[in-house]
Image 1 (cartoon, rainbow over the protein chains, first blue to last red):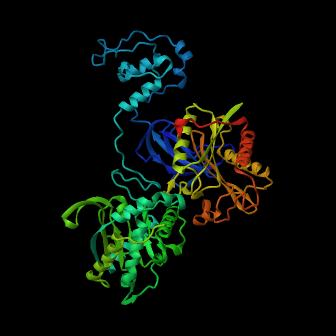
Image 2 (image 1 turned 180 degrees about the horizontal axis):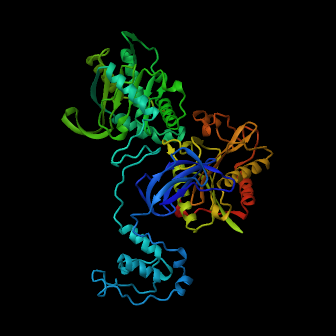
Image 3 (image 1 turned 90 degrees about the vertical axis):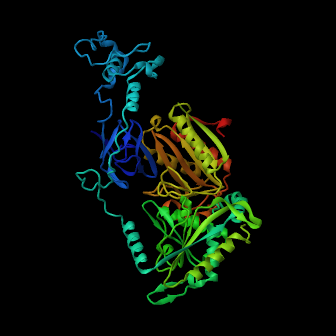
Length: 416
Length: 206
């Protein structure tokens, strides 16, 4: 086992924060391959593995600050084909010169009939060390390309060849940090849920318990929006520094539909219906290990550009953990864009105490039958409204979706 | 004496600059080129350090940052094995270069204890975020010369909800080229180069 320590990245530096593990426990790392990242004073540094091996133990979790020279992990060299304790100097020329040349190979004679025949050797000088390693591992040196002076095969070349030849390390069970007590079986592990995960879990169970969920799916033709988006993308990028996506168009259309069918914008408190004057649309943002739904306030008063900016701003701040509490509160309706991960359509869970959530499927070029029975290629997205059947009925939900669809399919507003 | 090449890239998209920088970092690691100082300007873009994942996730330290026209961005690509093997000393040196360059234009700038960057009386004038791999530096500093500061409203620069400023906002009329020359001069002095010589970028790299 080799200890991996927090390196000292400067004279005055006494500690460092481990920001990211680039390998997981059980992963194989090559010597000098990047193993983890640390941060000191706004400087992020990648740290390479000191030796090849399996990452056996992670002792310091991400986000933890430890003193320089603290052991942060252990590498297990076992399983690595080369574990010869060869002093580095042995490969240096003077040391080689001092060693007597090895006697002609006695191996392969009567002593050990099963031993491999001396492997063929390439032309060019070979150090005794290289000869010995090749013999011990039964390597055909003619298969190797030397990187040393004059194409000479070095110890490193052999090690690289052996590492490559060695069977890939068996997939080891993933051991997370902080390490839970390691189960004897080695096939399970126990880890407490993060606080965010617990909150999400509570919310999901609550929502499914209180609201009878029903989903209705409509096919929406986004060809016209796609064209607009293509036409204005470059200018929006240049003028506003924003990447124009479909989402602000869909949000704008949802706001119009909510204005047309305000009951979808309501919420339920016990047996009371709470009608909201403001249209505040939450947009689900996937985070590492969870999700959050920041809210665009008065979404119906914003242009496509304004919505795009709000979405980009909220999403980036959600991911950098810089949302203010009020920015995730007060939503009256939610949109979840699982289409960005390729989903055709889904049945999301309602964000309580709201009564509906719009799920947006992937926008795909699809052959469709158009007027006069012709087949055309259109940009199609399946959009689903999941609603609380306590308050809303299917007919109303479909009217809402009809309005959303109509706005998107016959987009009439200027983008810029 | 060590050598450093100055490459002025003009206005260049963040992604393109990132790719070019990555290429030069690899070449610097292989010892094919001497130390580099890239000077450039980005179109409007918001970037994130390690903390986040959207827009332009980057591998530099620090978190969300705005770049845009009028902001003088410097990407030093130095092999710290040839200087001091010290990342904090490196960051302090970059701050010193900016402080000294601003002083040449009569603008008094300073560090803030416990923070990274350069401040004037009006607020934070330069941000620093650095990435290091095998002791070779990348990313660097962003100095607001005539930056439209209203864009910073959309973000909280580097996690600190403190005011930002620019040379222009501080009433300093320094031009872009004079500022680049002052930075190059101080860069050579602080890092101990004979000079920082401007070289064109090889055509194929663009």
